[in-house]
Length: 386
Figure 1 (cartoon, one colour):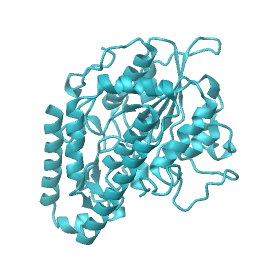
Figure 2 (cartoon, rainbow, N blue to C red):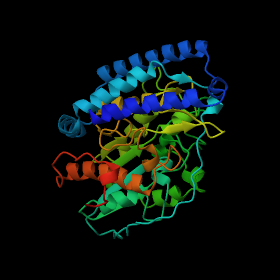
Figure 3 (cartoon, helix red, strand yellow):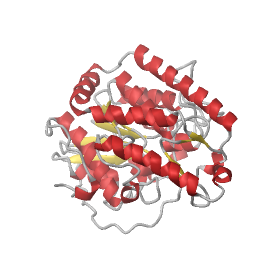
Figure 4 (cartoon, rainbow, N blue to C red):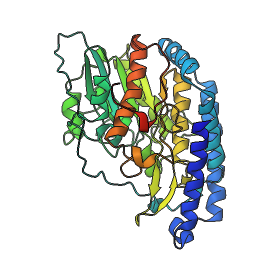
């Protein structure tokens, strides 16, 4: 109930901010016709996603059983209430011109509590975890304060983490780009999966730190993939899904499906943990808050709609779903957003610690070292590693 009230308060706060800005109608560019078109598109996308989730079959029975067990023990009534509240908000989402939603630039950060990542030798019997995603995982790389490093510090077994995240990347391929493997050059999730699986030449990654990391990975030994995308798909106006194909890599859902299936081919024993895009607050170029991840649409859907797609993929494929949109495991919402996020979108150090704690719980649960349900985290009472 606490989480539901926080989300309702978040929506109320955002609406108040919108009405309080000077010339608010000009700054949000709301048009009635766009609203009707957006709602129709959102409803169609939701119906298609639901149909996909009910008709497609699981390709990984072992992961399916694990996810079903996780769902029965981790999911709560408050989570469903939060999702219902967000769905109600989406029906009155504010449609803004695409250029209104601005992705903030990462600011300099002083790291206060880094962790020492233990060196794992080739002969060690270690857990191998590959992180794939955008700036949420790439942020603070190499400082001992990135989410992969914090996660490894919370796993009792020797753990080797590989960070393949690249800031600014979506899951899906550019709308009009060819999906031919020859000459592939897109760093989206599909491209990263193709590169790791050896389906495309990796040279397009040469300027990224992820390339050197990828070259050290033996996909056959990967135990877990932790995958997080969605914010850049939303920012770039990518379609949620396709009515014609569940495997269209130009759409968010299709990219997730194809990327995961590609990784399964080369990592048959790996388990998959999919993280939703996180709750956030959107600002325009002038620094005005124009809404949050439940209320602002660019004509395709709100960011929470992209989170729902991740949930659908997990339900269909039997993967573990880590919700960071609806305050399921920690209290990121409209009232705490400034404590978690540095700019309305990217996690601060303390936020990364909480995020990593959540991921580590699910990895430890799968390893049998943390069988208890996860305790709900409130940022004001959180101490990393305790």
